Image (cartoon, rainbow, N blue to C red; front, side):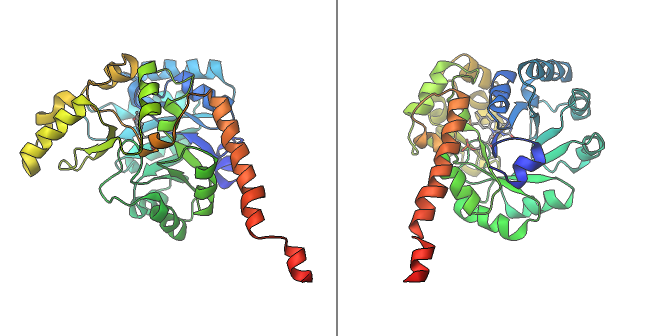
Length: 332
Ligand SMILES: Cc1cc2nc3c(=O)[nH]c(=O)nc-3n(C[C@H](O)[C@H](O)[C@H](O)COP(=O)(O)O)c2cc1C
């Protein structure tokens, strides 16, 4: 399939694996890129720019296909030395960067000078337009259903994607709630040039996370995510578990007066314990409502081939079939 996104990034299929904290290591990114999608290493999971440089080199040993790096600009307890992370990306020969979180404008010049294409992930039309204005090459439009940070507008993709299509000039992919060939065809129909998946890629053989995490996604339904940190205006969609229930009790008790410190033990430093250690009740970790559509743990290449085959069947068979035979209709 050829779209503005496959052309821009030099990939075979319009499928991107979004950056994911403690998931987006070289194993997953290279598997996605080898299967014809765009794999993305999560920059800030690497504790230092030197470690990121090493992860990029490791990924390059595992694939000769394009892959990218995610750089998230989110509120953080430990602010990172972004210019040094950017130097590691540029020196590592990366040609695609997924930015996310706050406005990345101040960090774009060195990336642009190195000929890097920027896809900015955001959750509203106004932020997408801003990304276009500051020179991003593409946008990943993250609907309310997404795992991770859906923003504060609560607009789901059925509305957000056609709104983005009406306003944007640069290409965009649909992100949030994407799982299969149906998602891809729907995203294309709504104006996107491809799709970005997070949660779906965690439940794959190559995702280097604890098996408990993959099983939890398979077991979860679309009703099993919760929104946390709403009062802090840093909303995150996470999978419910005992740690999250305790966190929500604190949020309910404190109401609008809740401070980050009140819930910190349930959100800080829990990713390695959950994703690598498999301690499923340790606290909050991002997960999308799309868990309800995930029933297996395939290899990444099987998943991507299945998506593309289903998309083709839907377009050539089902959708075309709904229109009936044009020639016959004319003759009649
Ligand atoms: C476990 C997990 C960790 C994530 N970490 C990040 C991150 O560090 N930076 C980022 O930009 N997005 C992050 N995301 C968001 C994903 O890149 C993607 O936008 C989102 O998962 C799409 O929604 P979906 O899960 O419904 O596919 C994360 C998502 C998950 C599920």
